[in-house]
Length: 453
Ligand code: DC
Image (cartoon, rainbow, N blue to C red; front, side, top):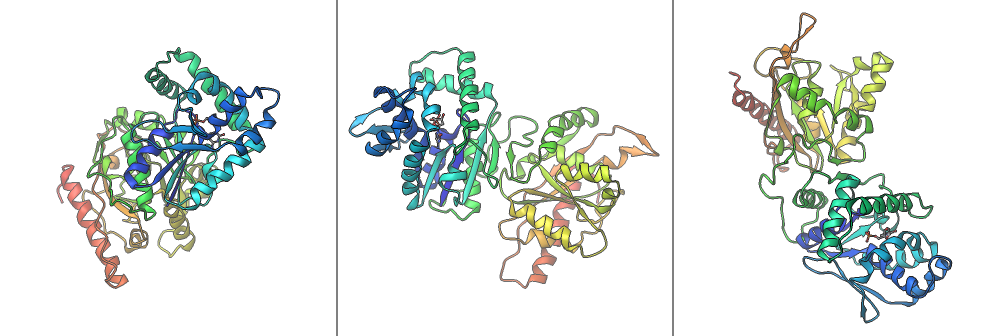
């Protein structure tokens, strides 16, 4: 198993990569430390700024060892000399971007990093792991965080080394480094197209580590038998929306859901239960009852991750509306017929490790209770590695009455993922069991939120 973790300075890469490696029993390589070591040597040899291109020779001729430590930054040796402290000082930090932009230095270090990865079972952390060094990695993660939060973390890290710097100065340095690292022509800091993006700004280290480990376990990593803790840590903020993003997730959705949940919570006094039942990573089918055309907005507001909705094809009749809905990550389904294209799109969402939102009753059911669950949902629930989370909503049927907008209380409840029937059973039987279990789980949730069945 190879795990590639990329992201800007201060996004939490080192801490997360170290902890993930420890839990999964993998080796860990901090590639930034290698660029820092070469920068230190180049500074000492007087190659900066005019003769940076000569740093390649230094990089090629000097053995650099990065030694992992349990709970601290890696120890770094150049030959026999330990440089762990020096490479993390402000002088090296100021010049490392320029040195790491040099093609000669990059080709030497990229080759060494590939050699490290060749034996497998490693977590590599840097800027171009997923895009250049190990594009074949089974798990690719791109960590981000706001610049203010990254500066705060860096300040704490420096303070632990006895270096006191004002927050503003650190933030400015980070901005400059981001611009340099992202703007360089060669192997810039960039999210790989197939990487999962995690915005760590409001997440605890534990949450991020859990998310990355869950991704690795989803890809078959089982070195130590570690598993996501029951229930996990609960999100501290309401909601955790959009912190973990699949490659298919869209910018418009992110922008829209930066304010819709807040608005909805206040307008409809939304009550959300069990959101922690939605796994933070990996493919998920959210199967929800359907009472109003506005349901996707409520479900999207309650769910911690972006939801790709299967939406009725009629919405695409208006080109503008179709464009908008498509940009929100939804795709059309022609109801009442076997729509192959819709199935293909749905499987594409799951394949990308994203969340698929379906309304398995097939059409709106405004009355109390649950309509009949259509068998088609099992097509998705029975896919390898997919979890199916039952969800119910009440109150949305009263939002629009006689063409008037009202503000009833809306409740949303997520249940634990349904148990997937054993593979030994015939396919048809497995499908029927999925429908039965989903029906039972959704009815039980409706009772829980106070609706008689
Ligand atoms: O992760 P860090 O802050 O220790 O990285 C130091 C610098 O090294 C960073 O500014 C960019 C560069 N770097 C790189 O270009 N490619 C990598 N794989 C890792 C780091």
